[in-house]
Image 1 (cartoon, rainbow, N blue to C red):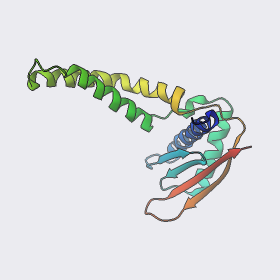
Image 2: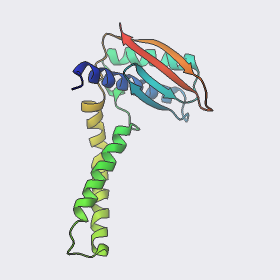
Image 3: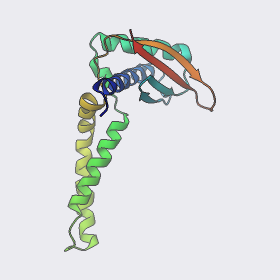
Length: 164
């Protein structure tokens, strides 16, 4: 079984990643950014300056530590996509099931059910982020460093996080 501290670390790093991307999004509107958290911190992919990323990551951590837990929730998180895909897929499967009706009779029900499920997906994704995939309580952590990684047309960076 995975230790609770490992899961908590991943959730905390994910929260800092989201907060950093939110701040960079405000400072650099229109610049596409993507992140992936791991046990050492997170990787950020996007054309930003190292100093801008370092500043945003430091501020993101400080604001989370000051109680701005909402920064841990990001509308473009992959958790939202998983929630939408799962809910709409299950809804379509359930509504479109049954062999007594023809395919053409089942398709409209499946589409309607999937569409209704998608209306629930956004709040479900936010709930999952807040309770499962991120942890906004990040006291005792610090940004250990920001390093630009080599290669590629799009810049990528390692943001290292450690216990203070």
